[in-house]
Length: 140
Image 1: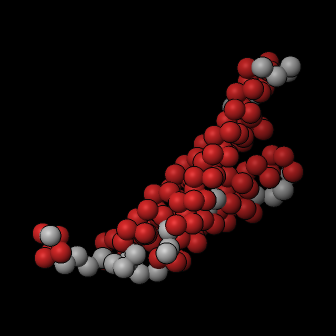
Image 2: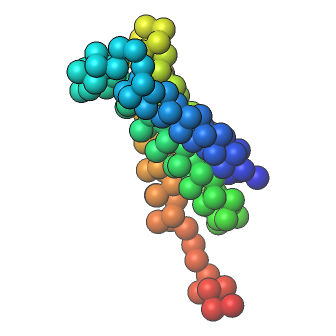
């Protein structure tokens, strides 16, 4: 059942990054040094954390969508397992941004995740172009 894990992990990841958004709201509006945070809106850690929040939710949503499509069209598409794993690996991108910000790690996870998600989306698109549709099955 390729796609089930994408949906489940996608929703869990989306929940995490939505909750992370509450932290960002706290830092912007309620933290003791909120002025400093607001003044660095488009640079440094503030910018990076917003990137992680946005991409985390985007990539989570993509996993939900990809998972649904893989479940629905599993018998008509090829390489669904690889596409599924590539989409899941794509979640390393926003996680990698957070590990850069909070732990000072190099951007390797960001690159791996970004490349994996891009390849999964393109591969799925090509797979849909190549998909054989039986006209009689569409009329039923």
